[in-house]
Image (cartoon, rainbow, N blue to C red):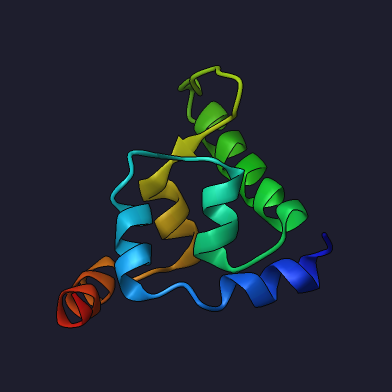
Length: 93
């Protein structure tokens, strides 16, 4: 599946679903794809950039089968407004 097809699938995510994603402690590439509405390649690049920031700060990234990064850093990277997302999710819930 190419990035264009994945982007069209992701457009239907609403604020309630976004709130569920941003409330997770760790996000993997699939979560980043949904949140950023991008393809796997772009999401992997985002994850790698955040992972590099963590390593440069002298901290370590947990190892697992699926590489994950802190959701807080993904939210900051994407410039998302958590308060707005949560307020809109409550209005829709």
